[in-house]
Image 1 (cartoon, rainbow, N blue to C red):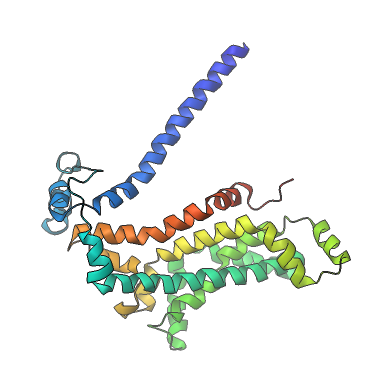
Image 2 (spheres, helix red, strand yellow; image 1 turned 90 degrees about the horizontal axis):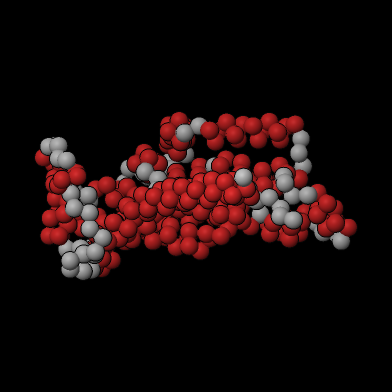
Length: 298
């Protein structure tokens, strides 16, 4: 009987493993194709995907299975697209730095606001603060499109339209980070705080020496999620910044797809670099932060 149970467990584990491998391949396939195609010549890209991208202008239906050739290894490697992106045309780099200038301050200051607010909610709970926390949850459940019009009206009232402040200031006070981090901080045992108080620690020292170190994985996870979310934003810049010179690369990518497909692949690859590097750097903290929700391990 034990052998049968072991066999069933072995078969179940193998089925789950095969399913996870297939899912992983499907998720990573677009990224691999984008990187591989960015090193292809324009002629090779047109030969492989010409029928697919031709639909954008010809408005004809083409069966992808018979007219598109997915290739992972270029016949001839070229860096002409990267030369155009990084050297020849400065528009791409300008849009890339627009993305950086918008996303980095949002991530840093949103974490700072989340740390201070979550610390107050976790250390000094009350019915009034519970009500505030409930309102935060309601705001977090609302899609950004719902609050986009009020943000536009407020930005217009304070003469912030067509400036980066119209995007950065509302994003700094997003409830997403506060919601996650406050849940994590509430799990920290009060005995840690009492021991620190016996040693003469004040609120600032309790925050910096106890709460922040114990929430490290959660902070890294939140920082990565916030960065990726605002790195890929499209609606906010289109509505709040009508000047194309301030638009990030996420908006600019849609404007080059019909012109030079090879260039689009190269820009897409450059655009993915920060998020990939961030994931590789914080992978362990991201997994731990999601798996344990920042809980204290014994």
